[in-house]
Length: 395
Image (cartoon, rainbow, N blue to C red; front, side, top):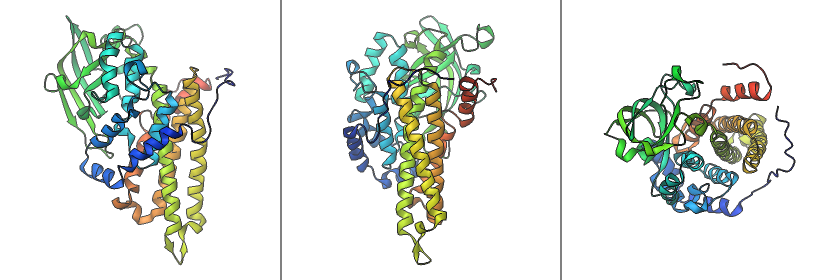
């Protein structure tokens, strides 16, 4: 178990980063429910929202100032995402830029960082796509089959990826592939490499992107690589050591998306509470009935508890202390708090919860994905069982 003395780490309470919160709320006010309803109906990309978030500098929160960003702590970036979700917007359309750039920042060469990070910070370039998952391997990342073979000053890529969000709306993509077959690697985590793919050049030249029809509007795609040539200078970090490049960014990713779930829970609880006060059935507000009131109250309690774990995980991360346990628990509790709040809100609205004009069913669909991605609830429980509680590995 984690027995490290962490008493010196301070966990903020209340509305920290008030200026950031207020700035994000002002942006959200320009993108009301009608905007998101139409984006969802058309399965479109919220270009205007992403542009506004980019121009404000919020998407560059974690990029150091020397590369054109704000150089803020992870908690500040999480607050940005949380406020978006709490006030009706959907930051998942742009959140990947916050954590995918971390691989480039931590493992890229100085030349790569100076070439790409300032343009990512300004919004001139979008790094929104992350190519990892494959049809036959799923969460067993070490078994992925997309292959990159060195050919002179290029890598030649063959393979397939699935459930890759935003590939049609991104300029760049981080691609995890095998440069050494798994049966030739000393360890199954060896032989994986990260390539930075310029999608503007790749599409039609060895890469085909097909849109997938899924339950939520994540602009989800399937990628087919057939002889795509990627310059060797686009290798991030060392060849064969890409799994570590990806792995050390997962805590940040989990903490960031946990903030989104907290924002989702806040939206559902506020929306359900208001409706429960306004809706009159049998000559009384339905919120007067314990069958309506108690599930919302319980969702609020669960949200508050999850929020404390999210804050703790972010504080540990920003202090440079180990936070794998806390990041995973934050992801687990926040996703479940958001889902339970979504269920309470849907049930409170009754039949109107299914009406798109109320926006509940859309947010309900969006909240559910956090229990599956970017990591499933069962894998988090497996991590806790093995790495925190010391039980035998379950998979």
